Image (cartoon, rainbow, N blue to C red; front, side):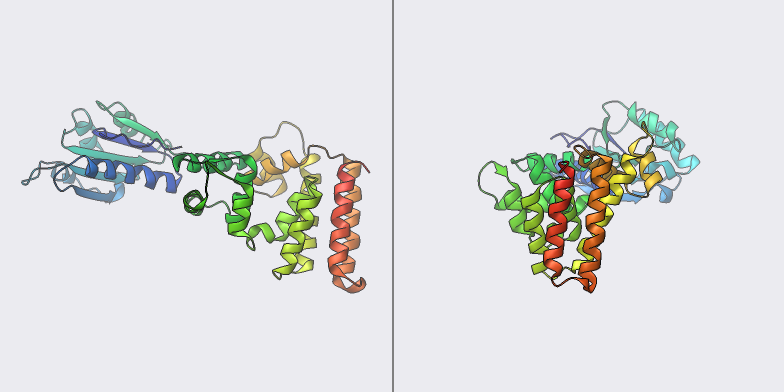
Length: 328
């Protein structure tokens, strides 16, 4: 995760990684810190590395006629041309005291000489912003956002928010800010998340399926009723149940030792979903998954017209899924 800017920014800040939201936050943090620590106006120059021309760096980092500090942000520094990169490497040996230079770099092999020089610059600071791809990493991100806002959130609340909002970090950060501002007490609870986002993802078939395969009967039935009351099609809910169970089976029978990324490629699901399914597999036996799939197959026919009540068919399937997980 990106480091938060200090009150007195370093003459050179290197932001390494490809997580766009965290990179942007780190850049804004440096600019904000420079502005808050200066009584004069602050000039901000923000440009893409590929657009940096030969000789332009000297102009950008030269002292202002009106005094004050300046911030020079060069994004995607790995794309800087050969001659401008050589100029920048020379500058990094003795950076100007009244300029806060911010370089963002994807972190790959391209431009590695420039990246090494930036990290070695006198007084430089480095912020790492790697891609957040795993389910557990997103939960950590959510908990971190609540800590930034002076709140705590347990795993249940973090999971509920991830279900409701999705995996986009910008949306998750905004949701954490909103919940933290509007929640009383030191903690944000699962109930608070549900109150805010009821009718969104927590009332979809996939959330119903998650609760069912995890063995949470009361929660699964409650969310089923919410999903139905908000207009989610019974066919889609049953499809989500089937999809969740099939993924359990595919992950459960995959070769042992595969990483989440390799397993994701194997079964055709994102790595964060694989991490979640691995946790859901605890307590399941192959025979139980087969029984649960049979229950969903029967419900599929009923929700498509063979049964009297689609609602009853889905609730019965959920109860059979939870029972199958328990070995009954």
